[in-house]
Image 1 (cartoon, rainbow, N blue to C red):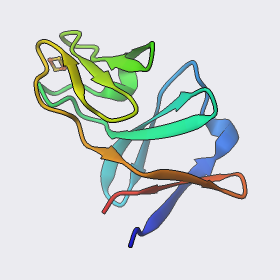
Image 2 (image 1 turned 180 degrees about the horizontal axis):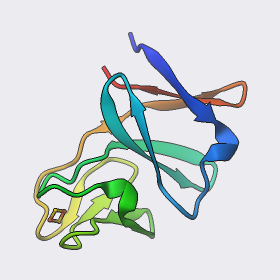
Image 3 (image 1 turned 60 degrees about the vertical axis):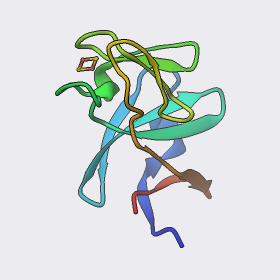
Length: 103
Ligand code: FES
């Protein structure tokens, strides 16, 4: 069973820019792709870089440090130098509020 944590209003998340939030002591990057929101651990699996500061293109986020690519929907590593998926978390929208489950 998920423990859902509120991270803000839906309007706070745009398609243009990922948003960094903290929930349950975890740093999380929230991405919007069309009408859907996705949550990834806000730490690259290759080094110390925040994916919320990355560049979003075609459903992927590019790490700002060495340009590794992750699939925003799944966290899967898509291109070198990243080889390990980044953790992804369930997200849901309830009455205009965004909630994420980090456990
Ligand atoms: Fe992200 Fe190297 S720290 S690709």
